Amino acid sequence: MPALVEDAGSRDSGRAAALGCRAHTGWAALVVVAGGVAQPEVVFRGRAELGDPAGRVRRNAYQAARSLKPAEAAVLVEAAEQIAAEQAAAALERTVREAADEGAVVRSCAVVVGTFPGARLESILASHALAHAAEGRLYQGALLQ
Image 1: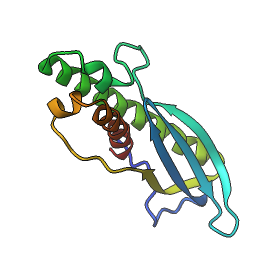
Image 2: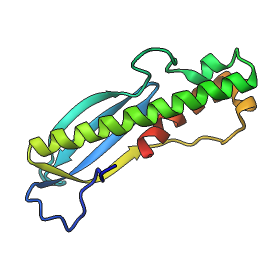
Image 3: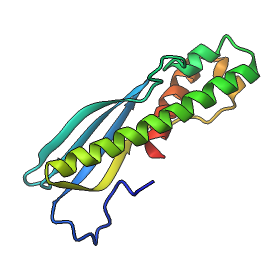
């Protein structure tokens, strides 16, 4: 996969820009800003769908997995993670291209993350609150990959 963020030494003459991402359950808010602190300019703002476009795997995979046997739950969560990672990569690539079309070169990227008290799948599935936290972490992780 090609690098999404241009090398600082790139000869590209576009304006330097930063990409910011905030994950939600099944989607992410994306914004590209150029121009620096003194005169920031929003180059792109959009929503990236990170869930299964075919709808076979629910966006709230951990909640859906709570009613399954542990092995089935693990398969469902892994499928959701894979889909989210693929969707995130495609969305980030599109966003970088759209920014470039506006004359901005993404040179840095930030993803808003929260804390997650890492837990085993069985513990997550036993707790409604942990399931929500794990879903948040799933989509954050997809953006970070």
